Image (cartoon, rainbow, N blue to C red):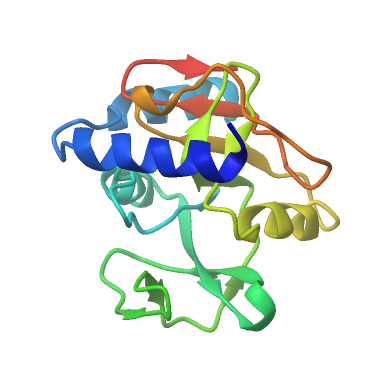
Length: 181
């Protein structure tokens, strides 16, 4: 199967198995950050969309623990940048139907929570096919090192994600069941 076929299959599985009560344990996630990435306080999250696993509870708890939170805004030419965001800040809906911050304070995360369609045991990520995160990671890594944490349901794991030169590998994948390193 090619990427497009795999993507379609997993998105269908994700939709059919979606359960809003199935989530990553926020306290375990924060313990993981404190142990593995103790000095990093700038987090780039995402607003869950299309049956993605919800990271908002984690972001809220991180903010209460003095982490700086940001969400992406999709710019022209399918480029993406992150902007400061707080749980109480307003959001606007972008052309894809995804909520984005209205902030104009650009932000460079130390840790990037990356939504995904599928992943494998080698920390390869299958995205939606637009290359938004791969391009953003390419851009930010010219400025600073960023830790890439894929966030997914465990049932999104596949044997092998087909990759090319543009695909950016993750540093970790965290699901409701496990942490892959």
